[in-house]
Each structure stands twice: as C-alpha cells, then as structure tokens.
Image (cartoon, rainbow over all chains, first blue to last red; front, side, top):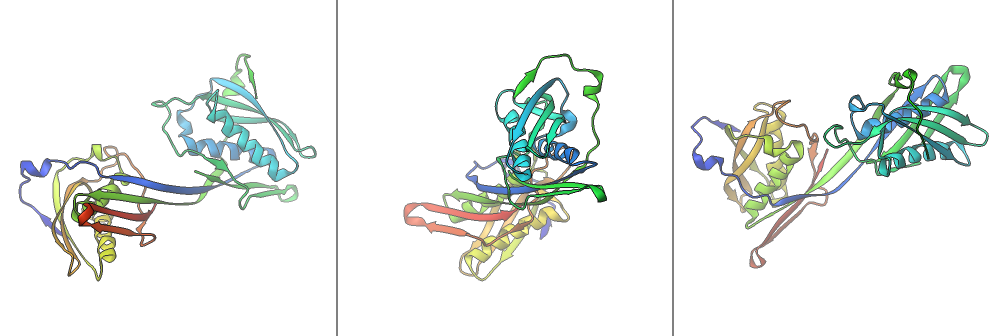
Length: 159
Length: 159
C-alpha cells in the first residue's frame, strides 16, 4: 500500500455507474432473555425481538393491543407467543412494542394473554433494524428453575 | 388480537429494565458484480463490498491510495484484491472507497495494481452498514467470456 500525495484531478472525481447487486443474504440471531419469573423471561424475549427490528428508544407508548397464544407445550407456547407478536408488526396495526405485560400465563393449558404497548411503525421516526422473517424451534431452550431463581429462554430467529 | 381503546394510565408508560441479549449472529452475503471487462467487474466487486459497509452516497473523494494484489490464480487474485481493499478500511488509513481504478491487471502473473479513491471512515458522517469480517472462496465464480461480452464475478463475504 502506497499513499499518493499528489493533487486529485477533476477526472478523479468522476464516478462510475453501479454494476453490482447483493444476493442470498442469510442470517439468524439467537435471543437470550431472562427474568425473575418465566413470565418475565417471556416478556423480555418478546422485547428482544422488537429491539432487533428497530431501536426501542425511538418507540413511544401510544396504543395497547392484546394478543393471545395457545399451544400444546411450553416450547410451542413460546413460539406462538413470539409469532403473535411478530404478526402484530407484520400486519395491521403494524405495532412496534415498547413494553409487554403478560396478564395471563397458564402453564397447564399453555395459554398466554399479553398486553402489548407501543405505536405503529413509522419509517423516518423508527430506525429500520433487521426484518424478522420467522421464529424457529431450532435449539430453543426454556429454563424454569424456581429453586435457583433461574428463568431463561433462548430462541433463534431468522432475519 | 383485540384492540383496547381505553385511556392509557400513567402506569402503562413505566418501562421495565432490559434483561436480554443477542447471541451468535452469523451471516453472509453474496456479491455479484459485472462490467464490460473483467477489470471493471473486479472494480465493481470491490465497490459492492464498500457499499455493504456504508452508504456510498455519503462518501467523498478526498484521498487516493494505491494497493497491489498478487496471487497464483485468478480466484486467488480476486480474493487478495478484496482482502487488500478490506485492509485499507480495517487499519490506517481507514479508507472507505467511492471509486476504484485498476491501473494494472496482469492475467498471466496474476497481479493487480489499483487506485482507491475515497476518504477516512467517520462515524456520524458515514452510516454504519455491516462489518465485513472476511472474504471467502466459497462458491466463488469468475465468468470471463469476451466473445459474449460477459464479465461477472460472484463472491461470498462473511458479515
């Protein structure tokens, strides 16, 4: 590498056309969330997902929506909970959440009801993060150990 | 999903602490570049890489640096060419290129000399794109068909 110190000529500033493109962007990210209860760990995991979609500091609480998720086991419940949240964003009301409050968490019937606080996603106001394409069951972990006060979840999402 | 229309209370605006983190972000992207010559396709491929690192519209031409790349075959040459460009950015002079001009392209000795026009990367001025971690040989393709006027390269980079 050799720095040239000469003056730049007018020609040096002429720009070429663009003859390139980007293909096949594949990626995933693992969300790791925890709390003082499994309920809080679920809430935090949902927030982690929204935090990947934009910078949450720009999101105001203007609306509240309620979602329900049902499943046959705990992993399914986590999956469907996140999927319902993703759906809130992907379609009307296009909600970006700033806060989640699970109001019902039934660990026997595997049912969640959650209040979702936030506002409609707005380009210009909210920095665009990564598009979350799907929740996955891949390497999913739910750690629920009350005697150690250990409540954690791990979820891989496709982006 | 059920929208609640009631007023939001003061409590609704209180925000929880953050108890999550992101792990294991893995990704790659394939660059596809072309031109009226293999030389132009190489130049365009280098620009595609810088275009992934920031938005090129924000980059001004203020400096010019010269790099050299040598290899034992054409794929090695493309690899080392991109790797030299990446090195321009990763260390002094921390150059983001706006324009590349290959001044020597020796397809027998596999040697490139290239003028690199741009400026030092500056947080705040240049939007931060993805960090390019490495060039790879994975699925690399160099299409050099003068009789069809077809000059294209495909390179996967780790981000």
